[in-house]
Length: 144
Image (cartoon, rainbow, N blue to C red; front, side, top):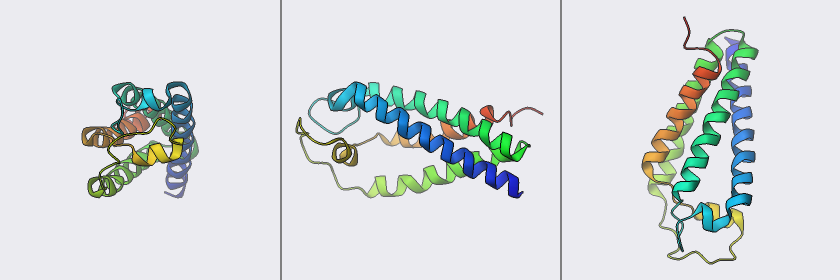
């Protein structure tokens, strides 16, 4: 069980690093105008698609790492559970978040703009599901 938990934690760290680097690169390529809908803080469909692709890649890699460390399907299964739990917990502040500033200034720093970003609720539900399924597939935990 210790290897499974260690594998899940390491797999989650790998997922975090890939998502952070992938979305930072996407921000550098798209900029605020590509990441957000015109003039506001609602994320664009382009950003949603990119984030889904990055999340899927991260989940596959995280699941692979969890399996390698755990040496059993339990590693990616624990990782999938961890992703679901963290996903549910992260929805709570988003549901109670104050509305963003009405309009987005063009020269806003990246971190400030990201703090104001508004992701659709359906995406907050789908993201942990993608992460959990990706971790299970990446870790070959769905095979009998």
